[in-house]
Image (tube, rainbow, N blue to C red; front, side, top):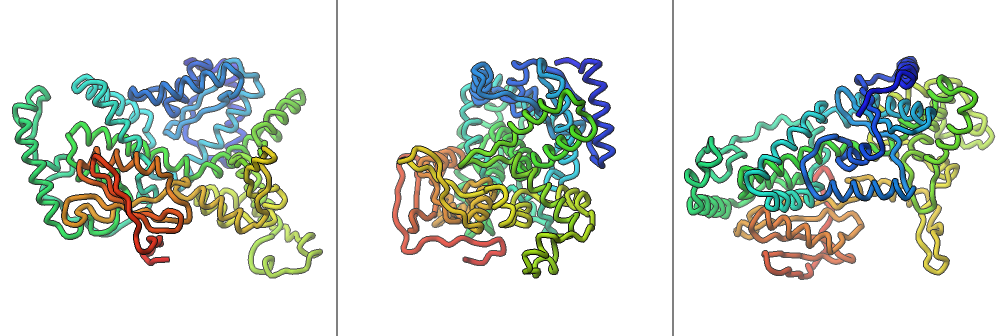
Length: 506
């Protein structure tokens, strides 16, 4: 990694000054100049230069390297939500591209700092990731590579079983403290020296403590007291895990929560950064000789393929639409009740509140609320947003529906929980046997059977007791059970109903 060249540094100062003039408020941003191999390594690590060893990162690096060598893809920018922010520029890019990337990065940095959905993230994650790597490497040295890697595989398969909205929910309920801390659910004796572990806590004693815990658990009537969506947290606190396994799972969970806001705001974040790189470059930075190259590269990023969804395109166009509507006063009851076509076409109250409005939107919304509030039928028609399906006879994507409500519903479903099923622990003492009972909050889409079965297997590896699941398949209620050896499936008399956030059935 290297520092910016004097020429790039001059442009960085100009772009930073322009972004501040427009009102962007960023953390200090450190740019590093790296080659294509380094940027692929960092991208494979999720944007961080140091991560713990795992085959997943090597696979991702191999994919990125081959894609670059074959000309299939190229990474132009990468920026980390941190204080200070770290961003990377790739050597060999033309000067116009470097300036575009820096302007885009400052848009992201402003979003990271000021969007409320990033407010709960660790702003020192660069250091925390390195700390995670050190801890896991120590476990590898102590317990061996294969046991640690295999357990990381299990944890990664469960990293979506968290409650992404829980960090933003304030509660005044004081939880009753347990007799034993969550870090030692088995009641094992404290060990200060690793080499004394098996002497102080011999295997027979550990097994006896596990049996006692399961017996105590089997005596409880309702556990947890209310359905638990953060399954990883529940397993960390209550599954019969060893200390190192608890720590590894907590590391995977912490990183899952760190990345969650990026998935929750993908369209807004990329739209905001694209809006500002376009504004800054065209109004402050570009010279005449760079206009054509900028337009060509910008258009390439904004292309919308049939059957696909481009968050850059949808995000920037919706930001521009909001700005235009609030500049002209095309909002509120008077606008909504106007049914004169000519009057609506020429409506302009010259309020000039558009820029103020998009800054407000940037601060409080995520993708679901952003699209729910501001995506309207007129926008969909103008931007040709339809629902597509693949026609095997024609061997291409064709328009399935132009119905606005169907389009909006599909987009909102795709962004709610990232389109993944919502699973909750209903009972950790199912039928008084210490088994887990999970429920799927069915929202119209069935779970994929292969993913479902593998996930249940991995939960069993952690819980070490049978795992049960209630869901719906093809409109019928189904009950699944995995006892460590085989799956049992049976139909229920009625399909389970989804439960709304207020606890009512629908």
